[in-house]
Length: 182
Image (cartoon, rainbow, N blue to C red):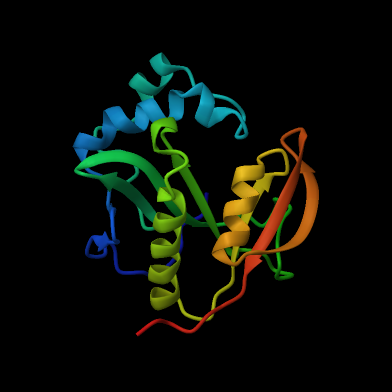
């Protein structure tokens, strides 16, 4: 993971119709461990991580870095949205030099099917467009993860490539730069 670069962090919490996107706090540790240990969440991202390993390795205040948003509903963590630079040695780029911003997200299974991921990702993308205008954003997902590729399309991502990575076919889409909202 390569950090976004020179951005003011943390931003003020981002409020949507139902959600709040904010920086991580100590109270999020248990929810993040649950997220990364979930077998349902891990299905298309290499599997769950062992809970005992997470208990040892997750810091007291996890995810404190630019581009890492905790998504909360009614005061409780339901997922995360991340924006990082895609490593240049990985496949899935739209610029010859690579290093595009990459959107990632994970939500607890009980939050699936309610439109929260779409709402949270759209808010994070708006923040990104305002913060680093003119930059493309990529999103990669296993083609087997139909819900993820459908979400990407709903957010405005256009497929630009398919490639093999992590032992599975990957879908790569790009969201072309948009003007900052204002």
